[in-house]
Image (cartoon, rainbow, N blue to C red; front, side, top):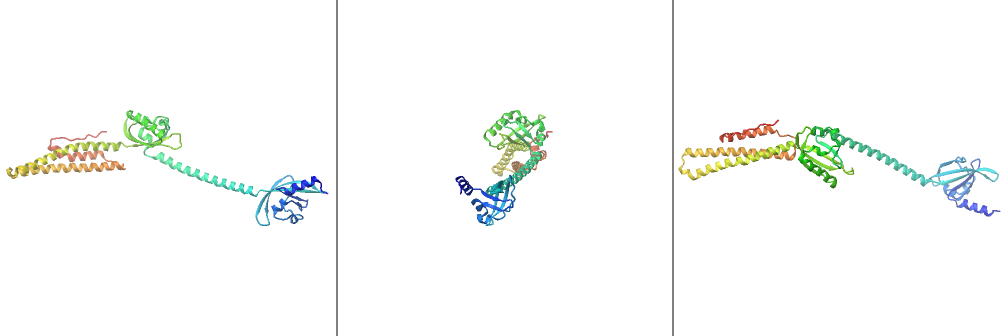
Length: 355
């Protein structure tokens, strides 16, 4: 007769979500609860009396790969204890279906593996990009400096020394404004503060000062580095050659605008004389006036050609081409072209190149 306590224990066994199987010393199943039937997809009648088929070791927890009747794989975690079953020693095995957990663990492992691979690939890509940036930074012909939010230089490339005379070590932690000539330093400092405050890239042209005190014209481009505590990349491009060409062009155009008036006035006067006094002039006088007009037209032609050549220089300057203009040769050619007109007026045009 089953007591109330035994009935309660039987209820616990029957309603347990864990599979409970009792195996004798020969490995034959002696008992299987309903959860075990569900786990193995076999009835208790089929299980009891059959070989369990898995090693049972008391006190150990093992994982079993179970192939169900349907063919679906199943992973179970098994714990084994020894106990008495009537008058014989048996093993009580508790099995819990951990298939979902294991699949989740496998999925997480695969995701981790994929993530690690992508991280490695990203790090390799970043390293390749950094190497390219290092090559550009170290081989650029323009001076490049990374400055902090205060305008002090953190790092400068080798070209910085070529342009300004300061080695990267000498320039480090110094204000960038030190490379500007005194009248331009406040302007450069204001420009840096504006870039830090607004994040907007800025461009300006200032007169720079080398370590030896010599000066030259430089174009400064400032751009803030995103997510880098207000750091700014500064690119400094030597534009002294272009400024020299601009000054030469302005001087030349000023001279030409003056010189154009003389041949035009002379030519108009000669033509007016011939038109108004043709019947009173001898053939020799007419020839003389026409010769004067022709000479002045020749002067005009030379001046116009000079203007056209100067406009070509201006176009090359706007393109910032890689072919420099030979300033000395250009000035000598202009002087030679103007020499006939200057000699006729008893004027002397000379050019003394500076060192």
